[in-house]
Amino acid sequence: MYFKGIYHLFYQYNPWGAVWGNIVWAHSVSEDMVNWESLEPAIFPSEDYDINGCWSGSATVLPGNKPVIMYTGIDKSIRQIQNYAIPKNASDPYLREWIKPKNNPIAIPDKSENASAFRDPTTAWKGEDGHWRMVVGGKRNRRGMAHLYRSKDFKTWIKAKHPLHSVPHTGMWECPDFYPVSISGTKNGLDTSSLGKNIKHVFKASLDITRYEYYTIGTYLPNKDRYVPDNTSIDGWAGLRYDYGNYYASKTFFDPSKMRRVLWGWANESDTEDDDVAKGWAGVQTIPRTVWLDPNGKQLLQWPIEEIETLRDQKVEVNNLKLEKGDFSEIKGITAAQADVDVVFSFPSLEKAEEFDSSWDNAENLCAQKPSHIEGGIGPFGLLTLASENLEEYTPVFFRIFKAPKKNVVLMCSDASRSSLSPDLYKPSFAGFVDADITDNKLSLRSLIDHSIIENFGEEGKTCITSRVYPSLAIGNNAHLYVFNNGSETVTVQNLQAWSMKSPTVMN
Image (tube, rainbow, N blue to C red):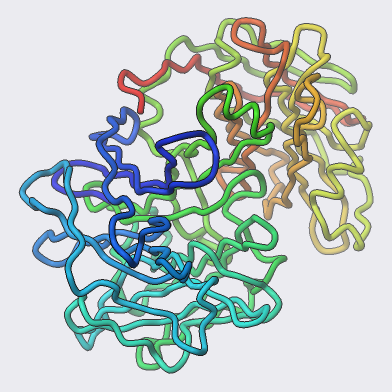
């Protein structure tokens, strides 16, 4: 949330340990979304309706610059119910103290709702009739539900007869998000209440069963309060994702100071709970991303917020470096464990691309079947991140290109299977297909590397993959960065720019 010149990040937090439980709403503030100061928790269990936990929700800034938090409380009966909180002193730009009005709770699960699957209210939007709407995630049997509620005054909420949207066989919808995007081709974001002819809407659900998210792009029908996905959006588990890696419980907000929509996501740990307890923390927020509609209207594009570039330090640049099959070349002169890498690869033709089997509909399985050390035609090529000197450990981020009847298929992978020699780690091969026009024989990749997390943006943010890795050798100054090619077609590093990244001046 942006309020009086300050960004506010609220997040689920256990103040007594690096394990699940005792959940409060932690609160941090920033003027630039880079340097963050931790404040006292905004909300913590204190009432009958939230005594067993203050779970996730959203913030809405009402007209007159009045912020309101809506959140899920776990009551004495372990029911999930919806509540709200308001600032004790709205003139304080840091919003240090919040109070819970006496008319809480504002939404209790009725007989048609599962009281153990009724959570995470969205940012509210105002309709043309002057009434507010919000969505609460849920499920009915195995059908994912976006329960719709309306209010005239933001205090009394009435459940609508029909959900905003629902999809069978998707399970519980956590952390739903619903917001407008412009179809004009601009990167500008829109206020959550925006309506009009030049607008599409995005609906995102975090899937409790699979622990990943998917989104659709479609049309919001205000007169019916229904959302209808476009026929170009798969509405289910196989749908588009913000991120094809370790990325969950995401949330967007509209930033009026720069007219953009900003996306936050959570990357959980992939090591053991004992490891988390030993280091004293678990889970990280990914770099905030600006999100907007691709000019093709079929998907979203994402890019790290521009403020992250203020952390760039020592720079190196490489141009026109040819890589034959089996070649790898180290990028020296930067801190490879904490770096920002932006590279454009080119290839002379598409003739050597491997044939694509139409049964390869799962990108992760294909990446595991064809990892970076398996030779190909065009690719695999890309980066070896967080690599040890003798390549006992490395996390490759790479592309492969395949021939298909209508259009070449581009696979993007971030493969953690060789990321660490340490035992008891989850080391998956994450992957997604990239809907890229490669008639110019080029592909781009940007990777933000920060010790145990790698965030990758393929082809200007069309496909994004986040990995959590825990090297035992490639740590600090012992980490290395390479470009590589393991395909029969020569690949050229047309341009690579890489920066050492400074740490923020103020860290949460």
